[in-house]
Image 1 (cartoon, rainbow, N blue to C red):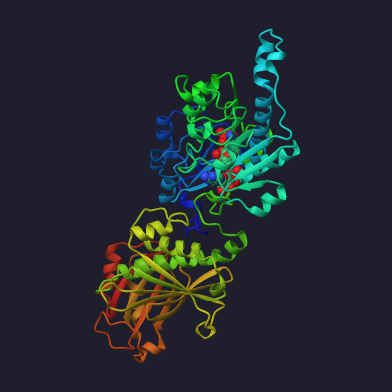
Image 2 (spheres, helix red, strand yellow; image 1 turned 90 degrees about the vertical axis):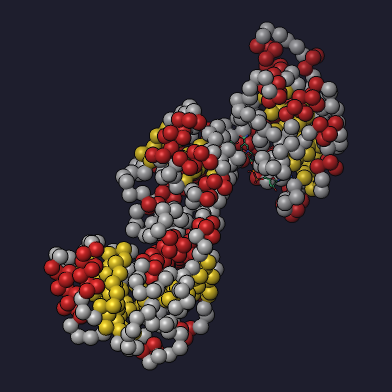
Length: 575
Ligand SMILES: NC(=O)C1=CN([C@@H]2O[C@H](COP(=O)(O)OP(=O)(O)OC[C@H]3O[C@@H](n4cnc5c(N)ncnc54)[C@H](O)[C@@H]3O)[C@@H](O)[C@H]2O)C=CC1
Ligand SMILES: O=C(O)C(=O)COP(=O)(O)O
């Protein structure tokens, strides 16, 4: 069990046969070969948006590149979807917030194709400088135009880079190798790395525009980077300047670029990406592709054999891991948990989810005035108290608490959101008092009943890969929270076990195990902290009987047990 998998061991709640993966774009077979032994992998190229929506309900995973628009509609229709993988960097074609709210993990390959994108930028840089596209086209038409196609050198020229991230930094290093002077604008750039690479950092785009001979943008497409360069910016550039775009269509305003080229505000452009792909002929993007001063490529930045192998292996590894219940290495919408940390937390994730399930089934369904609370405290003792990243434990509790009354798919991606929706508040305490623990680790789940009847407690621990509940409400117990169980609250008097056994036996129900949990010694003697009594029970005269049974039982059996003498309450729980 993991923060993402379900407690019954079926990865990601997939109980209905082999998980299915849909791949509506060309993704390198290297990664797909890793998936095929485990999943049904359907490569279906050229699906229309409507076809994608109608087919996605059958799939648990979706792997895309830049062409597929993973809209909210697609994500809503994908009832079984657990992961959307982007075989590349940019996730602007995926509605990430909609995926997050549905607990769908979005992963990408943050560095599998960055070298390819950087090299393509350099290819466009040289192609625009030396009129490569035009020269090739002319020669193929039978021409031999030498004097018309004189270019410029890039060595000793100034390259401006906007966005000194992974691609930008690689472009910078390559450009330095070509003898260029590189200046960059990136408010979040690491100044030490920039200095080491020989890149001068400028504070403002406006500052660099008048001095650059080439300008290249390598930011993601965001609200803040849309139309970063428009008419005003083009006008402030040198007339001999050339601009490059291997990031996303829209970072240069396309209409403004056409005007800048037509009016001679700049000399040329090398463009790989467009606001709409393929560009429609009658749009500014279409005009750019046909423009004589432009070298255009059809979004080829990541299209190298090596990059496609890298991104395919990167995302398929993560899809495999996620659908088997593990953690991704580069999720766009999930917190980062180191594998080592994750391994240590794993048994507790399972334990806490079970405690959450037990809580809801035991305290919410119990008759006699007990109502489940919504304000919880998770207290970590022993080894667990030292764990700093407990997000998976928090998510496990939300998942366990809501499992019985909601079909929300809860995981570390959406746990906070779902808790908020359901009005659940959870505080986490790391207890460093060694005196309260007799085990190497212990988790206390505490809640306050909504009806003000007091505190409700469940405690549990993990030992030797097994999970134990050590306290349930006011009773000390030791049982494994597994399978179907009947929990009887009864007077602690002789003969109870026999009576219960008779009722179950008469319905042919086998008892797997039985455990009598007695009242906490402190509470027997009326120590403070005990909640108000729901029943007219004499203090110290109660017990919980926990029976593991081999199958769920119907209302008739439960009623039979309830009518047994000395039984105060009976709850059926499924863990
Ligand atoms: N054409 C193609 O086939 C490919 C295109 N790309 C595109 O390249 C983009 C960049 O990729 P990476 O370098 O891997 O991303 P990255 O996240 O490593 O770098 C982006 C950089 O942009 C900076 N930035 C953000 N907003 C900015 C602003 N307003 N002004 C200046 N800097 C800003 C960030 O601080 C960051 O350093 C991707 O988002 C993707 O859209 C990536 C790979 C292939
Ligand atoms: O990785 C990226 O951001 C890219 O733009 C590459 O797109 P592609 O996978 O070639 O459609």
